[in-house]
Image (tube, rainbow, N blue to C red; front, side, top):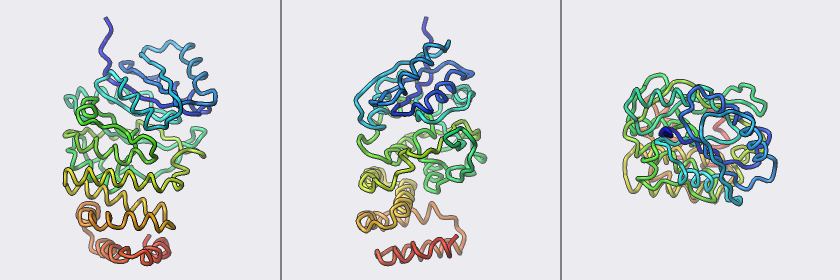
Length: 331
């Protein structure tokens, strides 16, 4: 009799022939085989899928897998197809140029048993270069990974608003029922699709397990979506407005702080876009009280800086001046 699958791993594939072998090997070597992998070929034009087929045919994997194919529609569409085809109790989104540690599945499932099937689990990660060499990284390695083991959604959203955990969809494992019950899908045709998906997952997850281990290996490489993100300001605006709508629906200050942090990070990523500033400044004003109250440590000097920033950013000229002096004076 076929055993119940506990974890569905969703892997969109698009032109990653240099990295697909490393990813598949990290799956084959897992110490716990109670998972399925759903590969979605998003119209690759290189040898990615052929390499995948050859590796899978030549290995004696003990997990189930399926390969789905579609014309190129983007990462969001591929992930959504994976969600609709998943059968596991939990879902995990794995990017096809990254890797997972060989104890990833075992650690996740052990934690699920230990904490009586939590809604979501988060874990730390390592950064690697295109050749697999370790890189230093500062983003998303917050103290919450070492201070907590079971958190509420409010605590995780607070950490998210402070940049202590990544917003990326690969930074957590969540129950399929959380996604299905609340009709959570990625915004098709948009970049930055994690920014308005991950906070929703965290909001609807009432008990979240925090794993201190670095279980994911995130590859920084030239030509990736994230390395070219400054070309997509319209998409950045879309996902922020979508998340703002979500905040307006549920009205908790932790979500407001997440929106505020996203606005500030986006403005920093597009410092020369007056259009972006004009679009996002009203949102900044609307959620800044939540952002200040949640995201900023209660140290006197830091709070003064943030209030000054709020005043300076009230005009585009002030915003440009702020960008000119920020790195020099406010490190």
